Length: 139
Image 1 (cartoon, rainbow, N blue to C red):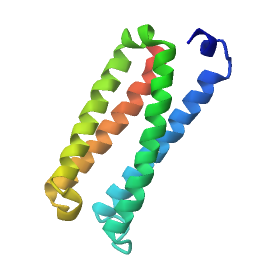
Image 2 (cartoon, rainbow, N blue to C red):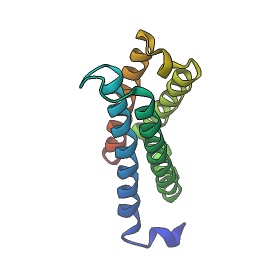
Image 3 (tube, helix red, strand yellow):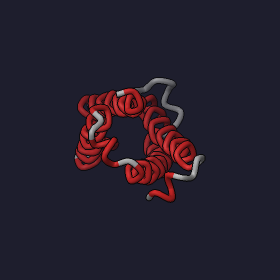
């Protein structure tokens, strides 16, 4: 990993890929949630929109996860000692468990109060993940 750390542009490039991945992920989740909550009308059918936005969101998650793993590999000791990083990892587990529960119960088809609450929780958790990610460099 030492050779990777000597490339001056590598870490900023990884951060850029990470941010693009987060934008694709969270942007598409917000789009789906807005539609599920009935904001902006019902002109777009929920299920086709969900298939499109979830595919893009998963691609964004893949970009963010891959770039995040490489950034972690470049400085694992520093990151493991960082409270914001540890909280971010815990929040990612919460986001994953919430998403698994959401899909396991068929919430996209039901779209009941619990499904909407899970979507709201998802958004709050992802905003907290982003906030913790930004704080990593300052704690």
